[in-house]
Length: 418
Figure: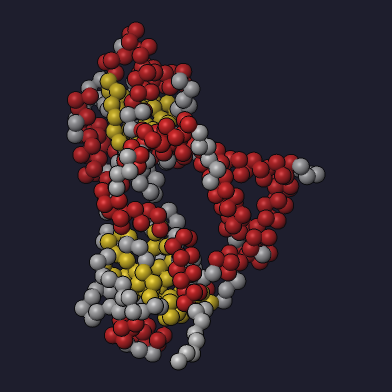
């Protein structure tokens, strides 16, 4: 309910802890001070999702520097989320030269929880009267990476938009007769029932309400501020875009990396099964082709224009209509047959039923694409789909594009002419 601590200050010496915490408070920056005495309580779940950590480099006295690296790594593990960490680590230390090996140590030992960037503040620069310069130094450090500053500000605005959505629902409930809890119950339940129907709202109330809250939030996000200050913020963060410099191939993973971020979700932090719209499931049983399509794999390859020696992973892509998925009333769940192939395999031009996904990065860290033959459809029971784990999930925009291609192919008119 109370969320994570966005900014934390960690030090084993109370004097320095108070100095930096007091400076941040004077700047109007809320933060959580942590006096490090050998560890962090296991129930400190609020550390997960931390945005900025000011941390002393020598948290443990009279031990090797690598032992202090290990202490910091343990803290970072507690702060990590299921996705890549957006954490900015600011080392608050009197011995900045000892930090030389920290980044490599974290890369080797705490790869998944390592911070997005590591900056340094030398405690020696702020002794005595020099402490008055600490606020400007902190502000300058946090602006060293304008891209993170812009993204962090966008994150705050998303939180504000979400708060406005909640506020609108609370305001609606407050305008009704009765107590707030009962009124909110009726408002949320009515919205969920209108979105998905009585049965689904009763079984999956939270998921049903999402059908209302998601477009409400999306609308507010589409109207975020676009004043001169915001334009300057994003210009500083994206000089390559301002200069019209082509950047797609410069991204790690290139175009495939960008497409993955936009269109593919992996089951980290969410449960993805064949019941999810856009889910991609593995089809490893050879008899599948005989039972479902009365053919063998060689014949199916012809329908995809795939050569016999081309490596293929056969998959099924869940293409349930969005309205049916929201209502959760389908007795059988539709899938289309897909072939996951290497990114350099060309899509056949003479097979109008074959759709090709953008190139993306698979869970095996390979650049791949999926060919789908929308004429090769099948279905499974809702229960079986629910019990089948997915490799990954196509996001809404991509599965909508596939659904549109499928419907246009199925409804194309035919004529007889001489």
